[in-house]
Length: 281
Image (tube, rainbow, N blue to C red; front, side, top):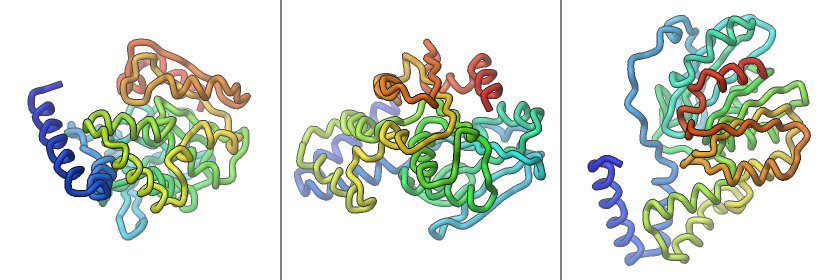
């Protein structure tokens, strides 16, 4: 971790200690806001293939959501969904191979990401975006989702018409929201159980569901699509342990590939992984 990052985390931890002293609810509200705020990576220059894309745009909850489409008019569509703090540009290497297979390809920057409007996002809002994309540009034949997009997609697919011919690729998905919250509280060094209770209360108040409900393992009981799940042993963002709990359920529609040494981000850039995904889709 760079010195600048350490200093920033130290400052944030100090603020949360003060918030906790003032009000447990205030500390939880600030933690939730931070939990939902993506810190965007510095973008390199736009990949050339995005110069060939048709621009798409729609409005969701008062925000403009921007996207891209290639190979318009083809009978089957693949939707690419990026992770937290990422953008559609990060998955440029998948577009040409999918086009070569005769697919129409679409990708959107989620709210608060890339070229789309917004400051914060949560799994419900991302899932609403996916539902809107399906409504406007569907039907969708296949989905490719990385990290945070995995939980959002599972929530959306639960409510979307699909069957075994629908193909879903989950790359290092955020499997259990409770695990992600635990990690955030550890990073912020928030050890006060009352703050965590208030945090969980905020999730329930906003969604009508407890934190544990936001779970791919739970959602998979309602999903009949064919799923390819790729996860790395050394993932320090979305732990393999959560994925293995899903694997132990022996869902007949899920095939798992466990890699080693690729972590959370190199995994979708790996040549072997990319071939597995393209072949599956």
